[in-house]
Image 1 (cartoon, rainbow, N blue to C red):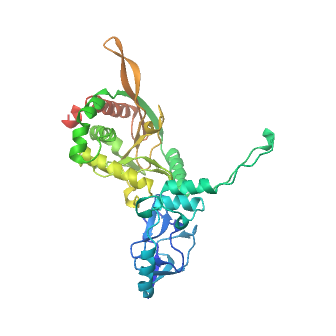
Image 2: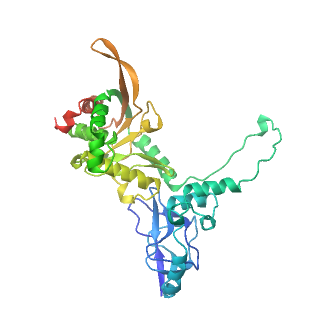
Length: 381
């Protein structure tokens, strides 16, 4: 029996997708649940697993093709299931999706590599080593005048990068964005974390980072200033009675902002687990589209890359975003004395159409106080 391979239902905001890498060729065996192809939308890269075991008898849409929900891209012959399974058993899963993508980008055939990973799986290092081994020997280059040595390369944007560009332009064109700044002494949070991090990890199985403190502080401030958690819809203001916090995560494919739903109802451990899970799956391109949709407020941490100060851009239709930066020891004045404290500059970009400067400044002060006096958050004060 011939079974059609169809593009799954994409989210309402996604009109089309792009086929990236076929992991099976026509005539090859496929097992039910095994990934057939990677599909890139403007939000995420998805895996499309086989719905039945058999032989991939026909590929209708090749790599790079634009496709829509429900479109047929291939066929599986389930009548060849017996021979297919025997063949599939002889060829183990060669590599993870991220490694296969790296190999595809550099025209490396993973089936020809000797995997150094568990059960012979091809790793990222194996692919990089193959590239190094196959690189041509360096040739003596003639001396070229600077005016003649101006190489250029034209590379089309990925769908995710195109969408990022569109949304950033949309944000700047449709919102009156201002940014206000403050500084926070991170010593209380650092002391609290150092005191309990070992016990926390032992009990919850996840490390106690700083992200959960920022999420908790943001929710604490949002509860005090609901307008910062609101959004604009035409001439209306929509006040959200829930707190879905987007956490910006940089990946090789571009920036993604998965949503921590109902963050006000989550413990520190639950927040840390979700952030760790998001980061791991963003790296492998396994975030679902539903995990990237919505959100009432966002947090972006340029400090992990060494940023000292920035003006983050709002993620529409949200009305504000918190920018976190690198914590550095700096001299500050306390009680008439100059002391050294681990300071962090905070930036709040907000839509001035509905958020006044007074509210934005007070909101950022509320975050500062929640971090400098973390007991307030723990005791809901």
